[in-house]
Image 1 (tube, one colour):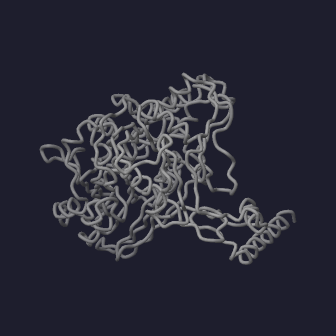
Image 2 (cartoon, helix red, strand yellow):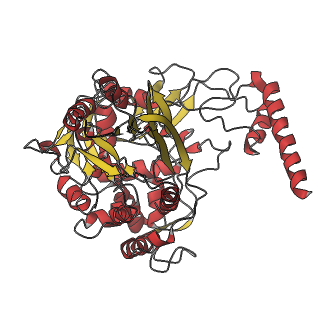
Image 3 (cartoon, rainbow, N blue to C red):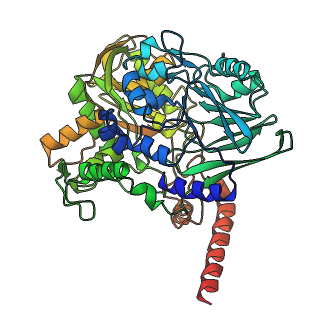
Length: 550
């Protein structure tokens, strides 16, 4: 946010008519917010404080604003000196939960109407949170249509800020959670900001520019409008600006609230003596690293073979739930635990979300359906492929792995036919066999229920997040030795490990002369083309070095 502030100040110096609009998911996603600030909603909140200082003009509700229930959300957001918009989020009396669904901003004679809508899928993830059952989440397109009618001719520009992706997430038939559907129903919208999917978007749908940015303030969407004398849009340009090269605004970082919460967070993460030498009070120790080195740069071994990180999470979930089988995923490709002292940030590195744990009964048939759903994240292997790769249309955090059962994932088979030889306690798992499954609350809602993978309902929820269970495990069992039970493996592939051409291709990838084949596999049939590409990259590198030396 401090980097964003530097850039925003620069833009404001260029042009006095600047509007700053946030697309949601502002108060969740870091240790500072999740573990400290949001547990004390009556105190000054660092994110809202920063947004106030940055002079935001409006914010749209995101689904993660609801993670702590309606009361906590409203307490935190009430600190905002700008309207928080949720045109499709209504209380029992039919009023906007945040008090506003849209707003008209005026600056330099220009009137900008901002309509904010949140994905209506919030109840899928947070149905158990305080106040959600009493809240109505309407279709985004319908709420925008109503707001446009209410605004009438009072604005020069109609800006829709939709905390949802361009395409439906769950409601493929109705499009209630689709930014594209909003424009289909409301073509008069001049601009559409999308979000929720945490991806970069910069395109047009028909005449309307559509833009969205990644999470964690890594970039900002800049939209420049040229208006005629009647304040009608004559020209639009959009740009996603990467914040990596901008220096953080020290004024923002020195804000007393921000500075204080930052210090509290460092102490919480590292112990009282700071981060430099990792000498604060650890939560535990590990005897060795929990992940093997990646054979191929950028391809996480944690999704290619059974590893101690995944087995640790699964073990903790099974111990705390008493379930027969459990699932989890590698949230980050780089998730690992180092040897030696461990601190809270290390646990956050392998489990970044505040998920709680559910249990439910599933049949063997239902469990296999869930496992097939997870295995869709891999691309199908073809003869000659030297690596396993991942489907670009499926986030890798959806590639769940399972503990409590032994199984194989045959990647020579098409999606839906990959799970083989599923064994439970030494016997083949029968389709009618009933097991207790431990699964996090997000996966229960967003996959098992949405995809109709299992008909049962949760019968237990943990009182603390999975991340805290892992912390407690290290507090009680350190030193902890990495353990791998090798209960699953990928089959149906022959990666030609004995072919010297494979070793050469991997060498070029690891030297960064070739891109990491993350979403596609390199094939030995393409060896000559890959060799030429690597040679061109090496020659270009030599030229650059010679130029620098001269």
